[in-house]
Amino acid sequence: MFKLLKMIVFILLSAYLILCSAVFYFQRSLIYHPTPDLPVNPSNILTLSVDDVKLKISVRDVVGNNAILYFGGNAETVSNSLPKYAAAFPDHAIYMLHYRGFSGSTGAPSEAALHIDAEKLYEYVKAKHNKITVIGRSLGSGIAIRLAATRPLNKLVLVTPYDSMLNMARLRFPYLPVSLLLKDHYESWRYAPQIIVPTIILTADKDQVIPIENSRKLFKSFYAGVADFKVINNTDHYSISLSPEYFPLMQ
Image 1: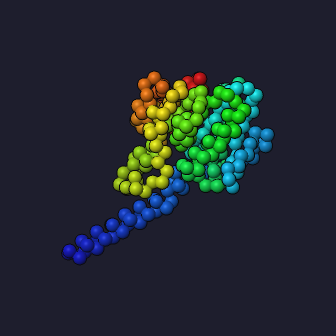
Image 2: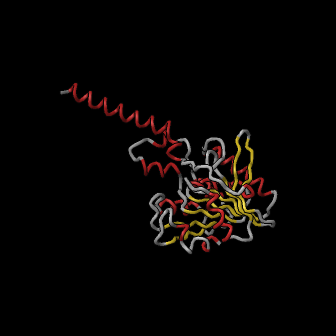
Image 3: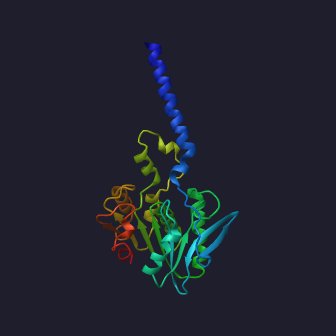
C-alpha cells in the first residue's frame, strides 16, 4: 500500500513538473497571438527598422501637431482598426504598431522587445508632432503605460487594462508557481505612479478576459487626480469598441 501511494505521488509530481515546464517553455505562445499579414494600401504602411527587425506601422498621416500612438490588443489586426480611429480623430496623425511577429512585422514578441519598439516609434513620431496621445488596449495597455512613464506625452488612454500580466497569469493558473515561471510580467501598477499626464482608463463592465477588478487595482496605483476611471455598461472585452460611447469617452 505504501509503495502504491509513493508511486501515485511520484506520478502526480512528475505530471505537475511536466506541466510547469510546458508553461515555461511555451508561455509566449500563450501570451501572444500573432495576426496574419493581410493586404493593405501601401500608402498606409510605414516600415521602421530596429536592429535586424522590420516593423510595420499602420499610418494615417496628417500634417500638424497632434498624433496618436496606438498599441492594440492581442490578436487585433490594427490595420483594420485604423479607419475607425481616423474617423474619430480627424485632426490627428495616427500610428498603429504591428507588434513583432504580427501582421507582417518580423521578429518575435517579448515585453523587452516591444518596449524597445514602442520607444523607437515614439522617437519617430516626436520628430514630426509636438502633441502625442498614447492609446493602449488590453495587451497594449502595458506597453502604453510604460512608455508614458518614460517619455513626455499630452495624454494617455488605457482600454481594458490589467494591473500586471503576472496577476492575470495567477488568475488563469492558480495552481502553478507563475511568479517563478513567467518571463513577461508587464507590471503596469509599478509605472502608474510615474504618470503625470491626464489619463483615461476605459473599461467594460462585463469584461470576461481582464476582470474590471484588475483595472480598478491599476487605477488605484495612480496618484489622485491623474486618472479617470470610466465604465461602458453592457459591453465585454471585445464589444467595448463597438459602443457609441467608446470614442467620445476618449476625448
